[in-house]
Image (cartoon, rainbow, N blue to C red; front, top):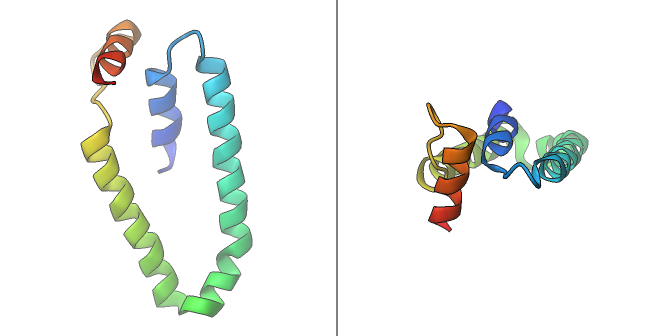
Length: 90
């Protein structure tokens, strides 16, 4: 996911709730990162190296498909156009 979650959230959240949305997004991102780092050794023991990285690869494929299907393209649009597009797609 990397930078995608930060950039996309800052573009699609309406100005009125952007600070709260970015805060919640940041807290959840770092919380999930902590759990992942904490449990990585246990995953290596339970699944082995191949199984662990196969799990991460599968998750990456899932995220790619989700982004491709569910997220709207924002390139070349103003924040107002993006907000109207996101509100229309609901």
